[in-house]
Length: 48
Image (tube, rainbow, N blue to C red; front, side, top):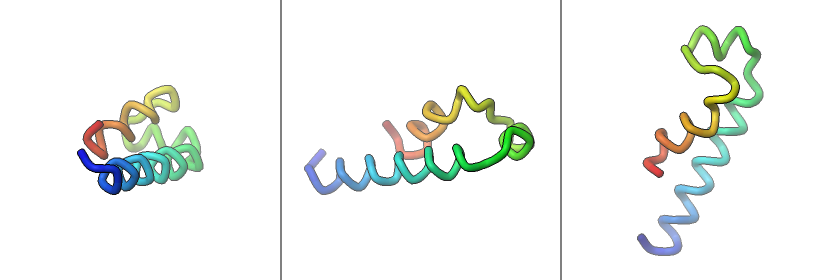
């Protein structure tokens, strides 16, 4: 994986974590996500 692609993946990961982290516990629950699972879900979303 080249540097630009790695950076873009990392940026998408951070954006996903930030967006999920801003959600309330209720919103996360509605999506079937526990707060402790945010980083795992974000890694899966970008293919890490």
